[in-house]
Amino acid sequence: MTTASVIPGEPFELQPDQEQLKAIYLTNTRERFKAEINRLTRGGMRELIQSEPDAEQLAFLMSYLYMYHWLRHNVPDSNYQADLLAAFSRGKQGFLMALLLKSADASAFIQGYIQHWLDAPPDNTPQQRLELFQLLASANHDPKRLSQRVLSLWNRKGLFTRNYAIAYKELARDERERYNAMLGSEDRERLALVDALPDPVSAQPKFNKLGLIPAMGCPQTCRHCMFIFRPLTKATPEPDALYQQVSELTQNVLFTGGDLTRQLDDFYRAIASMKQVTTFAILLNGDFAESRDQTRQTLESMARAIRTRPLHWLRAKVLLQISFDEFHQEVIIDKKGQLKERIPVRKIAHIVEAAPRFGEEIQLCLLHKQHALNFSMDLFHKGVFARLTQELGQRGHQVEVISASQSQRLKRNPLNPEQPAPVLKDASFILKDHPRYPIMLTSSTIDAYGRATMMDESEAVRERDFLQQVLNGDTTHGESFDKDIMFWFNGWATLFSAVHMCLGNIYEEGMDKILLRQRKDPLTQALHNFDLRLLDFYREKAGNLDHIMERSTGPHHLFNTITEDAGMRLHMTKRLLETHSQLT
Image (cartoon, rainbow, N blue to C red; front, side):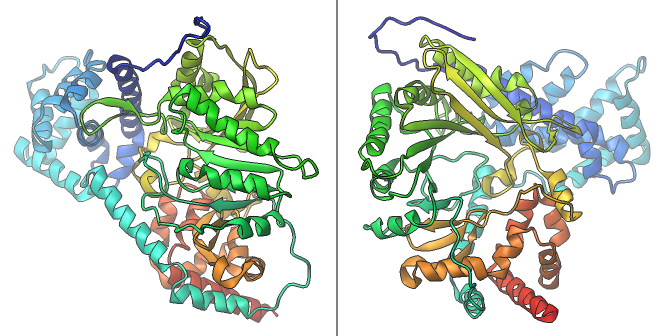
C-alpha cells in the first residue's frame, strides 16, 4: 500500500507533468506492442494468411510488416515511436526495431528485412534466415520478386487502410442510419403485428430495473466505446409524469446515456419525486470532479436529494457508478502533440476520497472493463488501479482491498488464450480512515461495437466460449439478453441490451401500450432467450451470417448485430409468428 503525509488544510492538486505522463504512455503502449507481436508470431499471422502454401515461412515477416503499420497507426508521432522501440532494440531483434523505425514505407521495410538476412553470416543461422531463403527459392532467388509478392499479399489483406478518424466516421454514419430507421415504416409495421396479438391476462409484473436516458452526448472519444454517433434526445422539459410512471414499475432506476454531468438536475428531480424507488443509479465518467471542492459539492447535492425525501417514503440511496479503466484513464497524445490523461486519475481520486463522507446516502461503484490484469491480483497492483492507489497515497490515504470474487464462468486471458482461467469480476476496497464505507469495483467485458471494433485483439477479454455455449444450446445459467426497458427523454422505449430495439414512443402512445408490447413481442422474447431460430431467419434474408459469427465477441454481440436492421427485425417477427401459428 502507498501512503504519504500532507499538511492539514493545505490545498493539494498534483498535476502529472509531461514526463510522468510519458512514462505511463510508453509503458502502456509497449505492453500493447508486445502483446500484438506475441499474438501474431505465436499463430495469429499464420492463421490470417493460412491460404498461402508457405504461410509458415511468411508468418514472421508478415507479423513485423503488420507491426510496421500498427506503429504508425497507433503512434503517429515519430518521437514517441523511437522511445517506444528503444526498450526492444537490444538483442537479436534489434535490427527489426531499426527497420520499423527508419523504413520510409512498407516496401522499404520488406526490402530491408530481405537484405538483412542476405548480408547476415551463415553461421548460427536462426529460423528466420532459413525461412527467408526458402521464400527466396520460391521466387527464383529474386529479392525484388519476393518483395513484390509480400507487398501484394499485404495489400490484399486490406489492413490499416484507414486511420482512426476515417474509420470512426464510417462507423458513425452506419450508426446514424440505424437511429434514423428507428420507428420508421418497417418498425411501425412490426409493432402493428405485435399490437394485434392477444393481451396477456396476468397483471403487469414489476421490473428488476428500468433505465432513463436524459441525453446521449459525451465529449470523450474512448477507444472502447460502443457509441460514436450520438442522437439528440430533445428532452422533455417536464419529465415528472415519466418519473411517476416508472416509479410504479420498479424500485431500481438507472440514469444512463452519455456524460450526464449537465443533466444532474434531472437526476435530483427524480430522487425528489419517485417515492417507490430505493436505488437511484447514475453512470458518470468522472469528468465533473475537476477539483476537490467541486467534487464535494456534487456529492453533497446527491446526498441532500436523498436526505430531503419525505420520511414516510421508502428509504433510498444513490448508486454512483463511475467509469474507471485502462481506456477512460488512457494517456493519449492530443492534437497539439501533448500527452494527457483522457479522464485524469486525480479526478477519480477526488471522488473516491469524497464518497465515504456521504456513505449513508451514496454507494460508490467503479465500473471497470476486463483485460489481462483481471486474471490475477495484479489488477490491484498494476495499471490504472495502481495509479489510483498512488494518487490517494500521496494524499495520505491507505487503500485496502477487502474482497475480490471471480466471474462464474472461466474466460480466456487475451495474452494467454490457450486455456480458460478464472477472472476477477467484483471487488470492494476501503480507505483505511473510512472503513465503514467500502467502495465497490465491478468489471465487465467489451463487445466489439462502435469504436471497440478497432481495438487490438489483445486488449480485451472476449466471450467466445460463452457464445459457443449458446450456439450449442447449452444452459446459460440464468444469463440472458436483457429485455428491461430504457426510457429516453425523447420518448423512445428501447431494450437494455439493444438500443435499436424500439417498442414505440411513450409520449405518443402511452406507457400501457409500451409495456404490453414488451410482454407480447415475440422478437423481444426470442432475444431474451438467445433463440437460435433467429440465426436461421437471418440467413433467409442475408448471406453474411458466417462472417458476423466469426467476428462476434459474445452472444449479446451476435444477437444485437443480427437485429440492427429494421427490415430484418420485421422479417424475424413475421417468421416467429408464422412458426407459432404452425405449432398451434
